[in-house]
Image (cartoon, rainbow, N blue to C red; front, top):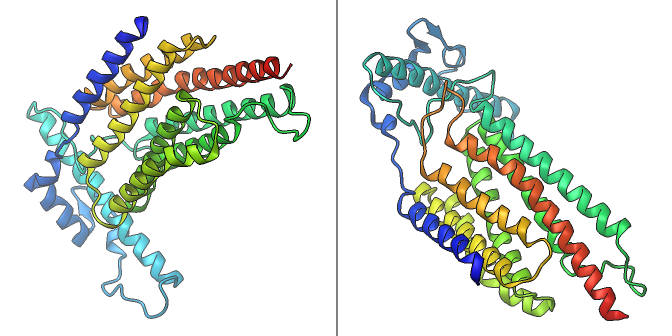
Length: 346
């Protein structure tokens, strides 16, 4: 394997550290002052000098006759949700102000650091960077589509691309854009629905990316063999998504699942790049190394600077240039495989 040894070892070390350190409790959730504040706020709609109209205008009897899709019922539920969200936010900021005056460090509430909201954006920087990642995947996929469809030669008989992984990368692009879309929505508005959609989309993307890395590394082109490779991973990913959505959203377990799939994927690409003579293996090494280093930001978490930039948002920022380089490698791979197959055909 030679020069790729250090990449593999780094990825392995990161994976072990992340798995061991993934479980994290939110100290703010059990803070008696915070819990009392939230409870009183939901009852009175008042936190110090702040008045939350969502709570004060709430009807005492929220039961509405009729179907679940009744407009008034949905509106009432939304008001209650806004009441809870605002109470948690203002109580969190009040409690953090008290802790800061005592010289105490910030703590997490409900799994998140105390971010400063901007309008409806609960984590404005992470939301914006997630949208940027979505845009990068869209432009990367669009340039890939134009390349294989209009610039590279097509098979004379079927008019299909020579590149055997074209359809797989199209699916990857859809899953990537879907994951970053829900990431942006979740960081904008953190509710139970957006949280589960964000986590489920991320798991689906990681699972499919792992499958794709194995198929490309082992150069699997037969459809039946691809199904054999994919079936166990698809079954596990589907079961995990159902588990976190309908049984228990275990943050620690979900993090371990995501980290293991990401680490195996990095190891697969690193080993393949070390063994192959692919002309763009340097780009692949850079993406693998950058992705491994970026995982340090998830491991060495820290409170948001000035209430906005935390380790997670910086991780979102780091993936933007890596996404550009990643799609560049994919396009190079399409050109390389097409050229190789045309030469063989001649």
